Every structure is written in C-alpha cells, then in structure tokens.
Image (cartoon, rainbow, N blue to C red):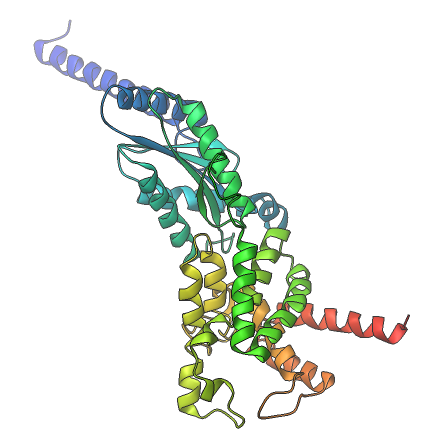
Length: 392
C-alpha cells in the first residue's frame, strides 16, 4: 500500500512525464513542418501559414508582399563541387534570410533551390529592399565548401483576395526577369501593358558604358573590348558556367569604367607614372564600382570590377584581398588584362613580345596571379599559337 507521500511523488512523476510527452509531441510536429536543410517551413507548411496571413490582410488595411529567392547556377554548383556545396549554399542563403526578415514574416522552401517569403504589412518596395539586402550580404560572403554564391529574386504585392499560389506566380514572373537580366538582382513582374516597350537589358547598359569609355579614352576602351575575348576563354577554362562567364565578360568590358574620373594629364601621360599619379590611378576600381552599383542588378559585376587589381598574395588594391577571397571573375580579368597590356604599345613604352609576356605571367603565378587562371590562360594562348602555326 502506497503511503501519502509516495502517492504525491507518483502524481508529480506522472505529471512530469505527461508534460515531457507533450513537449516531445510538439517538437515532432515542429520538426515535420521544418525543412531539415534550411530550417524554414516546408512547402506545405509555408502555404498553410501564408494563406492564414493573407486572410488576415484581406480583412483589414494591412498590405502584404511575397518574394521568391533562387540560387544562381545551383545545378552547375552541384555538378562542379558536389551536393555538399549545394547544401551549404542553400543553408547559408536561408540563414542570411532568417537574420534579415522580421519575426512576423513567413519563410518556406518552395523548390530545390528556392525560398519564398511572405511579408505581412509590407508593400512591394519593402519586399525589394529585403531582397536587395540579401543580395548585398551574399556579395560580401564566401560560403565554406560553396565559395561565392549569388541569388536572383522576384517580388510582388499581394492584391486583396489573392491566394498564395497566385501571389507566388506573380513573384515568379519577376524572378524570371531577374534571371534574364543576368541574375544577382531583384525584379518585379514586368507590366506587359506598360508603354515604352520592353525593359532594357543589362547588355544595353554595358554597351553604353563601354561606348562612353571609348569616347573618353580610345586606348582604354579598345583595350577593354579586346580583353573580353580572352576573358571568355579563360573563364570557361577554369570551369565557370555560362551565366558566370557572361557576368565576368560584362565586368571585363567595363572594368576600366572608373578611369572616366582620372585626369587627362595622368591618363595620357607619356612617361612612367609617379607615386602621386598612381595614387589617383588606384582609385579607378572603386570609382567603377560606385558607377555600376547605381544600376539595379549590377552588384556582382560591380564587385568584380572593384577587385580586379587585387593580387593573389594579398598585395593588391583597393582592399588587399588574397587567394580565394578575391572574386574568381576579378582574378580572370587581372591575368587577361595584364597579358593584353604587356603586348600592347603604351604611351611610355613599346609592346613586349608574346614570349616575354608569357614568361611574366608564369613568373607571377602564385604571387600576382591565381595559378589556376594562369594555367587556363597559357593553355588558351598555346592553342591559339598552334592554330596560327597550322595555317589555313
């Protein structure tokens, strides 16, 4: 027979056990609603939570917006670096988003590399600002196992009475536009009835900046155009996918755009530059970045331009980055730019021969240049020599 004290202890133990069971059941329910790789809601759980929020928004004055975020080149990243890299990229993007969004916002994984955000009480401009913050944060981050990762995003305001599926479809139209314009940007769905024709593509903007540079300084403009061809070959040679190659080629075409702010007395000087001249000249990558960041969606290109004079050993400018911390596009442009500059006549010296330039590249591998980039460039130059030697 149990004593009174024993009965009390038993009741307390049973209550503790029931509470623990309830906690475990709640934890299991939460786990079933969360995607294990991203720690955001699963697709079904997101739709359920988003519909509730949209119902609340429909009964009051609150606005709501939705955004879709997609990792650029995700399939190529998995193919090139393995599934571990893809998982790392997805987890890092989700982690950044969780830090950026508010507590009332709803996050869910809606595709292999796609995360949706429902933002109650937020208009389309706020949704764009959220996406832009994510894009900017990722531009400054190197993800372990995955390297540099960019995202494209589409956003849309949720009209009263519109369900989550229709809202996501509208955001997806913006995402398609962001991808078509080169990625690493956020876009709203295009207004098909808007006057003035189609939205201008970045190719037009890049071409306009290139023409302005050519008018400002013919050597610099023609030099940039010539470097693009080398850059495309080398970017392919180091394993970049087509979208990445196009971004690096765009950066190569305008990598000297900051020189529009360099005085003529320095830009056209017929003798070697002195230290004061170099102090001015070293400003051009930062000026170029500022120009390009004024164009929506050009953040990745702007970052490549900023760092195209960084050295692999950390001795470059403007930020002294080293090794893999330097964007791969910047490393490609640096080597191609150096080869073309060495083999071109300059106001203060005659062009070096091909063999001399190749020797300089090889000598600088591991210090000034990324050795992998130098190998790809020399392989391309050797193949060109073989074609020329073979003749028609």
